[in-house]
Image 1 (cartoon, rainbow, N blue to C red):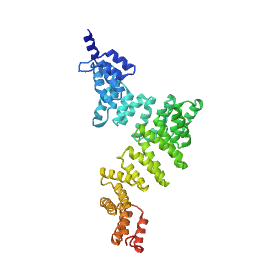
Image 2 (image 1 turned 135 degrees about the horizontal axis):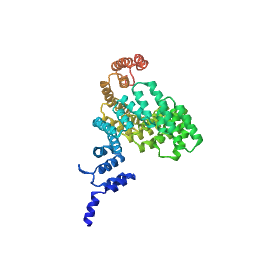
Image 3 (image 1 turned 60 degrees about the vertical axis):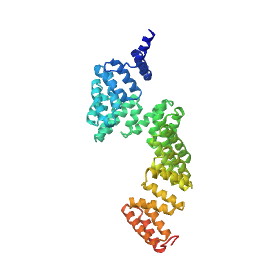
Image 4 (image 1 turned 90 degrees about the horizontal axis):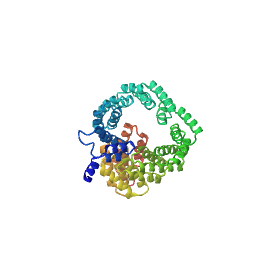
Length: 443
């Protein structure tokens, strides 16, 4: 008897699996399901549990086959068809994306879900069909999508009106996510702000309203007010990354305008926290580069170095970060760090003109003039109008007293500047200098 019970346990318990899933425990549901979903003759209930568990675990591709199988066996079950369509829709990426969308469309039609069908048509880029379906469903959740369809169809005035309708519907439902999405597209950010002001006046502890007002204020360039709201929100919800991200944006904008180092330092710290939690956040990455650009414009090379060293360590393959870090390190006399960064870049991209140009400057500063010249000549061979390479080679020839070469580089530089709408006056000055000072240190 004990052996038989063990076999039954290993085979799974469908009722227990359904119960675990209903209680919000998909991992337990899969464990209790055992192998009951295996084989073409399995109970469709088992397939449904298997697929729904994977769907809730964020694995839609794994959910597709069992949910489609279950729906084919139980075509009258609209909720099951809806889940199967959702799994197909969420899997619709890559080379098989269109096939997934076709399956999603068939299953959503079986479910009779106009909103889901509209979303599928939207992803298929049939915006006329999607618009008609969204208008049939026409609840707050799809009102913004209907407006987006009008915009994509080139019907700008209708789209703006539809966004305004969506905004009012969202406010009536208290759906602030939809309201925020519609407000600025409708040109009615002020309407949303007024609504949020009234909400917070009646309930200052409404964190959701506080959160969205911080975002709205930032988008309306009310940066001091946005900073206040977002700081209050984060005091209660310190792990909310989108709020940190928006606060970082507001701090950078305000800090830049006010020349406020403390704000820029705070934005830097927040952006680093965001990248620690989400390395793919390009907004935080670009914000740090913006701060570094501010420090550069204000002559704070150490500030540039500190920011770019952090970014370079996070992603050594990012060429822009590597060049900026190496440039700052070079100017601070940290030659070993600069050299390592340049050489790593050139190992990955031997012909990168920016890395070659800067590496040549480093080598020149270290006394390797021949190595520097080779870098600049390589750049010029690939890009005959590269003004940085031409200027460096002109300076090199002038300092060596090679008047013929210097004049030739001056001529080429002036032609290149004219061709690319560059600094023509600078090259005219170079040519003039060769008339009264034909040779430099070696001339």
